[in-house]
Amino acid sequence: MAKIQMKNPVVEMDGDEMTRVLWGWIKEILIEPYVDLKAEYYDLSLTERDRTDDKVTVESALAAKKHGVAVKCATITPNAQRVEEYHLKKMWKSPNGTIRGILDGTVFRTPILADGIKSYVPGWKKPITIARHAYGDIYSASEERLEEDEDAYLLVCDKDGKELRRKEIHFFDGPGIVQGMHNTDKSIASFARSCFSYALSVKEPLWFGTKDTISKTYDHRFKDIFAEIYEEEYKEAFEREGLEYLYTLVDDIVARVIRSEGGFVWACKNYDGDVLSDMVATAFGSLGMMSSVLVSPDGTYEYEAAHGTVTRHYYKHLNGEETSTNSCATIWAWTGALDKRGEKDGTPKLCAFAKKLEDATRRTIEEGFMTGDLIPLFEKKGVTPVKLNSREFLEKIAEKL
Image 1 (spheres, rainbow, N blue to C red):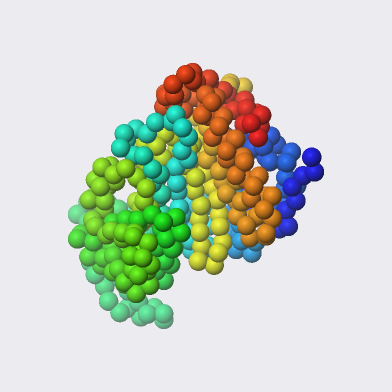
Image 2 (tube, rainbow, N blue to C red):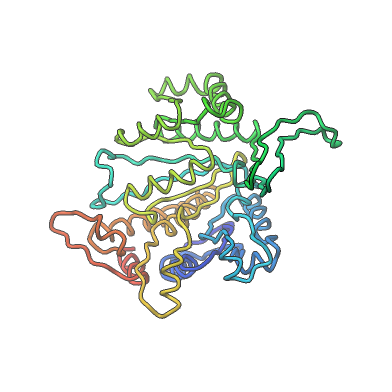
């Protein structure tokens, strides 16, 4: 067959460890035989980020803004142990945090459902989409270690450095730690509009919760901005579609989510979304079964897997041992990017290919062929699940495709 043509490139951000291995196999087995792939390539491996002093991460984000569509492999955010293991110059910040800060978008994460994969929460019948604010909070915070008899203040100055006001955080009568984090009205408003617009586009209710009773300035500002934008810009459209916007405390939201049947968009602050998207993904089956897309106000889309680099499997792979690593989320990153590229460029064959690859992946699982993480979750009358290794799973999908 003649390969499907692309008009414009996607920005390809390669990553680390086992997901980097899967990345290459997905391209080799599932994409390049069918698509004349145009990609502007950036190596976001930890060693390359260290070599370039993290400039490659910034360059990849700017390229995403230029081309409008990006696809990203999972990457390592180094801790002290990783600094030693990889002999790094410093403990570099999260590449996702850097990219999200530049693109100023909202991350939407939705579970990938397949017939036979049972949810750990029996009442969940429909997908729950996590909308994660992708700016600020602890991901760009300033932190400091303090010693005994040191005092920490929140200090506000004007643009020339003149002190305007200060507020004591804590006087340390023993060693401790302090953290300062921020957000902006502009970013919160962008987050709110993204959430309301997305909920309308998928015709699902929007739920949002913070801890405004405790954080009376920081979290309360999120609550107020969401309320103002809903009333002024979205209330009429929501009511016309019969959709609900629910705001309540985040702990109440969590309780409601567990009791629900799903079928809504759950807006979360940055850290909440980081944690709760993993909870939702695992409860629906596996971290390997969660799609993720960063949507920016300027129309930039960056697709990625919602999980990490699968370090344990990577070291087994390096030792020549067989792994059975779930690649669904990484496949969905590629299908999402190709579908959006096709939509933006007016190339329907590319969109159709992306949907067929997703269908082939689902059918492979539904017919009983899957990676090891899904075996304990699979229940389907008349079908006995077969465990495949990482590459065999992709080859089985290729048969369906």
